[in-house]
Length: 150
Image (cartoon, rainbow, N blue to C red; front, top):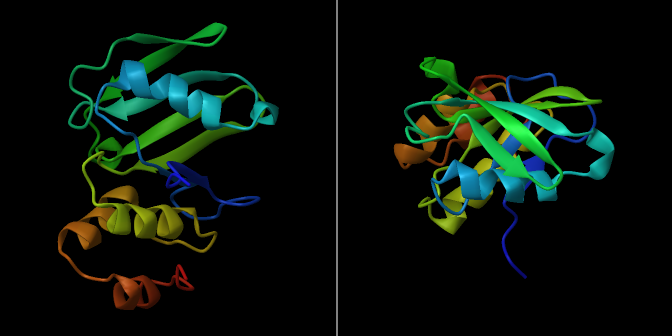
């Protein structure tokens, strides 16, 4: 069974993130339609995404998805450096951690779990910094208010 590439916070998120996405490559025009296909049809039509130019420097302004066009907004915001903001028709806006495509599966799985935990207090840059430092992150997670991703 393939590893999950998208994990959303169940119900309502109260943290800085609503889940995580682990694309297979850094070509947004290829990956965004796959993300759209992964979403529950009940969330409505994905109409716009905001991504950081650092992670997606060659992102197009529009991406074709099944049956519609998705507007792509580029930002230089540090908060968006490792995140994607997804605007959907009926559910509003989600902020997702974007896990680098080359991240090892073990680390990516841990990040998917941590970012989608309802009590996650950490931002996308903070979660990735913990992963890049090679730390487990559990002590930091709990010291910063998280209930633990496990």
